[in-house]
Image (tube, rainbow, N blue to C red; front, top):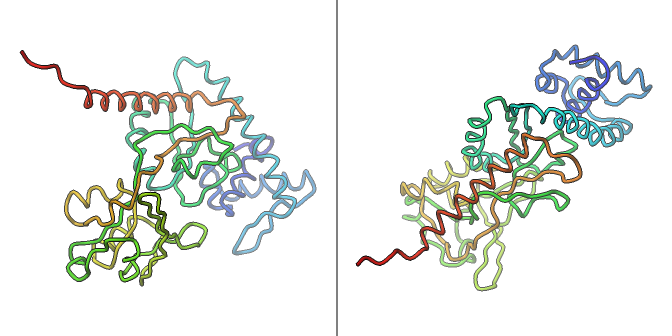
Length: 313
């Protein structure tokens, strides 16, 4: 990392993202001492403290917060300009930073694998987290989320199939409890509750024939990660509410049983999204092209399945 210029700005943004000098140094591949000196040198030069430091925490000062808000978009533009110049290379190369949720990343892995095989000099830096962030401020090229959660000022590229949520429980659980026939019946069941990144408890959503219902299920267990919810449901601790993609293997194996299927209509699928106010890096354009290729191929397969077969003579 350089000790002046863009290197110092990258250092400040990394510390602001992680609220930690150690974690920021790991991301940038430098020592904590070198990172601290770079930030201190910038603070000395501009004459203000950007971070409030204690032995246990790091937080942005008021001046630091304003500085980051102003610098992050500008630095993103500079990165894009560098990327744009590099796009004239004969071979596609560089790093794409993508922010997404863990479940979405698992669904997108076949796409990531195909991308890296096609462009072996490209690198993907995938960061998974539950909270929805400002990808420009946090230094990402793109994000992947459910279509309904994509910020309105972003350009969205749909990929993958439409999804539904599923209410599932184990055979052992249903041996002890009568399966619910309507969402209201969930009030007599043990529900594995979902805590959102904001800290709020997610209410299960249902819809049928125009009737919409939200259920705040009761239960002894609250979790914030889908793999833990699956494990709890398999153990017979209660019913859980997850995407069909997440529970598909368990439903096929019979380790989980689905209920209330007619109350869970299709949702919009995943989208890759990115800011439209700046140059699109060549690597990101290539990834978008692959998404569209896969979508075209999926539509062609679906079309072949629905075409009437030629009659035999």
